Image (cartoon, rainbow, N blue to C red):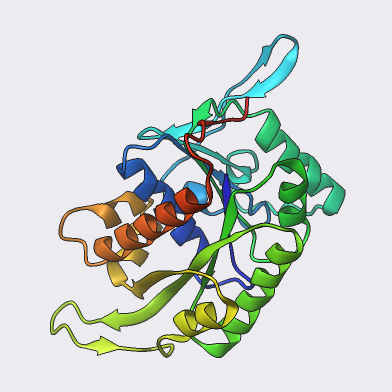
Length: 261
């Protein structure tokens, strides 16, 4: 189980988290995706999922069956509240929700559970680190200085929680014109790589600003970013491959599949 976080909003963290989950599934892994951004759950929209998960009892204990999208297991507060309704909760309530999502959801045997965190250094990461040992954390940021400052704060938060940093992803790294191929560094370039070097953590790669990525996310068809011919596909595959390498380098030999139920 690893978390995908950021120090601030608006950097495409949920898009990257969902893309990593899709990339791992494309490699043949059994993957779950937990949307822990209870204040702004966007995973259901990005993946085109609606409805409510089924509930049942097992040996007298309440259980929740995760939603599924093409074999990817999903859980999000977005499945449990009405569209547009705000979740106005304090820390203890968030801790309880995280506990239910991890202990009461029938995830089954997983190779990876990807946790999309809210854009904060607050209660949810703390709850997760207390409930289950995280394999590590992936930090998402954009190239400009203001985003990098907050990314470093997120890195330091995970270090204080004794969660290994699996790497840094630079999202919206540049724009490449699909007609002429000209590259434009709208938000600057190379800031995340330089920050990763300064902090002594792996740089997992850069993902360009891409119009089709935005369209696919709005239509709930994020998986189409991995289709043949997609301009962003090589970048997402590279980030996934680099991440798997980092996880395997930190894992014990013959690590068993994750089982949360």
